[in-house]
Image (cartoon, rainbow, N blue to C red):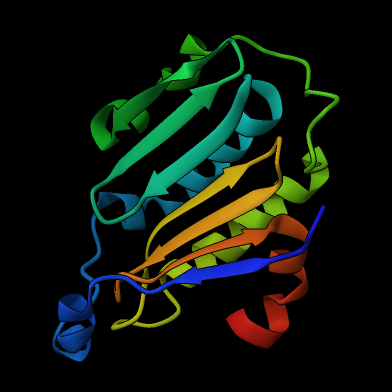
Length: 161
């Protein structure tokens, strides 16, 4: 697999006003540990192969191995409700996954750090696809990054602090 870090610059009008905005905490931020733990469990044990946390809008988008062509959008109230995980059966971790299950936590911990790293340039959404090993990031400056999970973890100290 080619190790590439793809950066896409977004809308210049959003970047123009970048420093006149700041991150505003929401319920996902207040319960960030719970959100990250739940996403990790879904990826490791519950048949989800791709998960995207939309921090700014308080939603999680999930792609299931059982129904990969139909993604599911779960709003914060549903996602954070007691018993949410019961809707997902225990599943054996896929043998064809590029991301070993023990590295999922590392990726999600970095994503959590990036959410609160800076008040002006902050993470709006972060995703992980365990099958192809891609981490996706969208920042407040409308910049998007797609990077292999190994490189993402490797650059933990260099880039993410």
